[in-house]
Length: 245
Image (tube, rainbow, N blue to C red; front, side, top):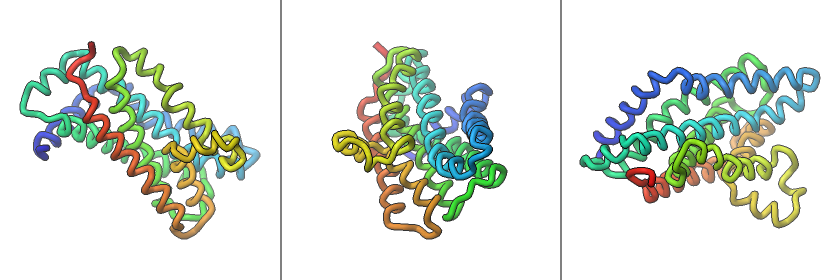
């Protein structure tokens, strides 16, 4: 791995994204607009907004970063750009980390905007520090980036990338504890939810919502989400292909 090549890859990706305003809008505005919509949906029930809003503050960045990252990486492969890059002295780890840095920088802006709007404008009532909320939201966005990079290796078209949403994201969404406590699920489903990273993302947000101090459970949740992101990035580098067959 070469740091200069990694940063050069990140700069190239950011320059490309700068010329794609629709992608920037999807990344930065959609999570904020969805939170605002949720605020008015629960306008008469502030407690429900606080509970669900904190969880979705972690889920929305994960989902949007997954979509954008997977599609952008697939375009690099189908256009032949990836094959040309890997024919140069550029390792797979350099490429994957470069993408992770570029989209990670956008994830920082996205998570900051969503957290700022939720806490500052929508008055999301949390017991803990907003910085802890931001930390979990950022890690969720980075996890979405890692999942997108990994999944793109198995898709041959943008349509197939979208098809991965029901397979990768929706089961996590249903089992993460957003709709029902995980402890009330069937034992088999609870066991599955215990190994899904989104479950720990939601649990981390819940810890910030309910507890003023950093708890052991919060540290565990953050560590699991960060560990999953690193593991999936490693798998993404291992499965990276030069082009789509």
